[in-house]
Image 1 (spheres, one colour):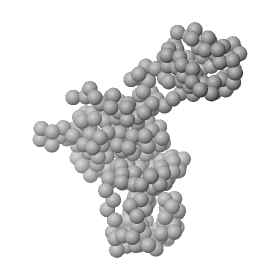
Image 2 (spheres, rainbow, N blue to C red; image 1 turned 60 degrees about the vertical axis):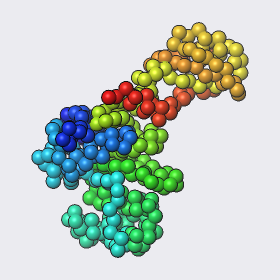
Image 3 (cartoon, rainbow, N blue to C red; image 1 turned 180 degrees about the horizontal axis):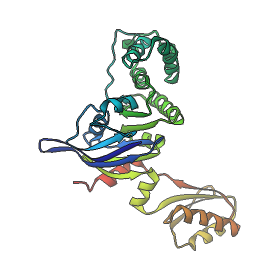
Image 4 (cartoon, helix red, strand yellow; image 1 turned 30 degrees about the vertical axis):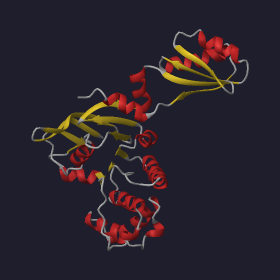
Length: 308
């Protein structure tokens, strides 16, 4: 769906984007994580055909961003990190204007716009002027605008920036709904835990370089080499302790309150499956076994601290 090949952007001696290579499959929600100035907005502007790369290229649904920009724009819905709105228009008029700009007929717009407003939870605000909407409502209206032509790919630059907690939850729920609709979504943020909840895959970018890519748990595993496991047992915790102590993949075993064990596990998902299977075969009375998710801020700081 999206293929980025050696994408580079320089301004004189400053390199904003440094040979970025990335492949994103159809239907994936990909989170771009990085501090301000890391290269997120530069990447998104290039993919949206608003900025020409210095070298390298990218393909969206088979179309070259440099040579087939008109076709690329038909495939994407772009939401920049600032929302440009026309204050003297009502919400419904705002969407109608953009629908007409995409060549959507009046009859089609009349059917489509109410559906979009319902999707972003603004159907009750359709006759309100844009300038009286809250920041969160404006963000959702801009998201509806990016969907007006039913693009396959959404490029959302900091969509939760400046929103209060409730508005962030509303935005997250809308993105989950869009995922179920099969949209391929690129979303950037420096609000790291939110991306962990929303995204299938994250990429960490620092000083224009992609320094890590994968699921949050995979990135943490590569860094630490160990998972923090929590095991709750029904009774006979001494038997559970003895069983887990004998496993060479387990270290730092601790007994917590409420019949709970915590330990570091250095093994693959298959090793974890075999561990649980063997525990049940030895009649260790396990109620649950789960992995404690790492703190994404800690992961980000660990990964980027060595980047020059």
